[in-house]
Length: 372
Ligand SMILES: Cc1cc2nc3c(=O)[nH]c(=O)nc-3n(C[C@H](O)[C@H](O)[C@H](O)COP(=O)(O)OP(=O)(O)OC[C@H]3O[C@@H](n4cnc5c(N)ncnc54)[C@H](O)[C@@H]3O)c2cc1C
Image (cartoon, rainbow, N blue to C red; front, side):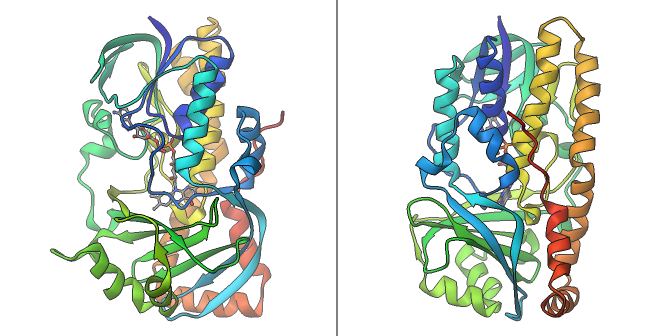
């Protein structure tokens, strides 16, 4: 029997595995894909996570991460505003970052089973495509939506998704001629598209659109030329940036919800514990921060200092204190960003009164959460 079994090897699962393995626990992690692999993500990480990533052993400088400290926004009509990013962040692909974390985790002693899907988890017993396993503690870091959420009958997955809350996400890596220290956000009807530099002179172009924008039989290409390209800046970018993949990465059925943080037999971190609108640019930092909070409670449990119910209630309290306000704000912000009239007025006002933009951005970024 393992001390800890982790479902999912994204940022939350890998951070948990590194922290727990490095403290001497026997950890097994299941990842349904094979590293390295691409993910739909804007690949901008706020600076609040840098100290923690360094503590985990990630050398972002050596990986060629881009340093980003300016922000620019355009409305659907192409009206623009730009500002300094009060906290700033870095650009690094998930292909590179997740792969580096997986290598670190293995070197700390984690058993990582790739190409392995967890099909069910109950009372410390896991059924996977590589056989059955058991662990004293099971942690769910399976991301936004997984087969395991269905098996666990989690409320967010059993409730039918209202059309207006159903989104698709699309990502490309492109060659572009944009400044490397700038993250751009371009609005279109019922969606927004971010673009910013990552490693190796590449840029990540990633957008989120209400699924209702994609009419029956409409292709992603048609969505881009009919809907996104109504923003003249996006029209220009789609016409001249070179795509570095044959096909974009696409995910569907994305919905932004706070979720329960666990039950007496499994505790959740990252998107599995709550999915924040990417507009706030901080889901990755939340995944890492939540993993850091959760591992401390798991250590307390494995050392016999608390039962799993105690760990769950402590973790839930800390999660709400760390992210509750940011979560509510980002929901409000996403609704506001879909109102064309509101956004045209906001951009006009922010151009006349620049501190307004800074005040809004500050609500979306947190303070550094790790002190070494
Ligand atoms: C369009 C879009 C753009 C975004 N842009 C940004 C951004 O720029 N900056 C930012 O900070 N955040 C962004 N986010 C959010 C960010 O991507 C997530 O918050 C972050 O990836 C969460 O990490 P995680 O480890 O919880 O989940 P994930 O990274 O999704 O990892 C979950 C892992 O679990 C694996 N898995 C799932 N089910 C199983 C199973 N049953 N068995 C085994 N393995 C399984 C998956 O393969 C996956 O690797 C964006 C999100 C979207 C949708």
